Image 1 (cartoon, rainbow, N blue to C red):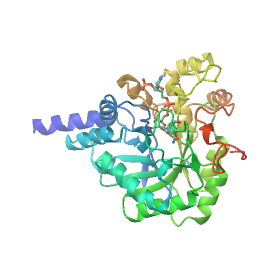
Image 2: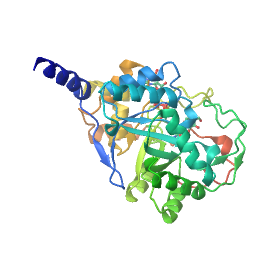
Image 3: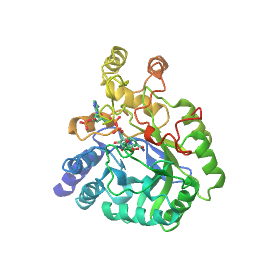
Length: 335
Ligand SMILES: NC(=O)C1=CN([C@@H]2O[C@H](COP(=O)(O)OP(=O)(O)OC[C@H]3O[C@@H](n4cnc5c(N)ncnc54)[C@H](OP(=O)(O)O)[C@@H]3O)[C@@H](O)[C@H]2O)C=CC1
Ligand SMILES: O=C1CO[C@H](CO)[C@@H](O)[C@@H]1O
């Protein structure tokens, strides 16, 4: 009896230590937690610990990518947390992304299988086309600067999508979607796909709140995942003079104080209230706990108005080395 109570207490603590993120229902009926963990630049050697801690404190959606070079460690962490009884596989939502060098139709299933092997999982909950632009495979990829010396090719993302549909049909991925697609690209994909994308993962933060694209996606039943929600302050390509979002802005600090929260929590709550799925990255235990602890307060219309004023359509992630490709998403279109 005592033993049972103790086990219950531990499980209860690990899953209900704070308000859990709500779940959203995607256009194929699959449920997805409306908050996740980013893993880009989470270094091998620290990401395993970070993912285990994240799962302990309530994260259920882990955002990965083949490009990030850390799928193996993340997979080890996930499997350890399943083995020790903290979570069941079906309670997790694991997503990863197809890199630009595997866009030809017959490369997609093998690339997906490679990510599954790295993660040591039987299926993905979500597989995304990382960018609408295909790149030539030049050998080693630098995850910090993957577009340096990039040679783009003319493989159409519609062809790539056929490979993604095969991943879905083979049961390798329960959901498939895209990332960094603009409104025109998404519209074209929706018009000719047999399986609809469930998600478009794009940059969303106070400097680029993406309201028009979020509305566009919502109207078409495609959910938006918000990457770089804190403005990606450590992006390796930032130059002096680039606009970097500051969590120390006095207007933000004032709102945070009013709610008894940190500026980071206010930003993440704002992005959640925009109707997206924020996926902040952290490998720091305290910040991992802080970031997910945003489900016990609400920003009022006046707070939202202040936060809206930061928007200046300034991108942290622009991949401008690809700008001459006809598939480059960030030019020639309003959003
Ligand atoms: N699809 C795509 O093309 C892209 C997808 N992504 C995804 O989105 C995720 C998040 O975006 P990312 O660009 O990493 O940037 P974020 O906006 O999530 O910022 C992460 C940085 O902020 C720090 N940080 C985290 N929490 C806090 C906090 N509460 N207060 C202060 N600093 C904090 C982190 O450091 P520390 O770890 O030390 O806490 C890290 O340096 C990525 O990791 C990746 O999974 C990102 C870019 C492009
Ligand atoms: O996910 C990502 C993280 O940053 C990378 C470096 O530019 C991007 O390519 C990528 O989209």
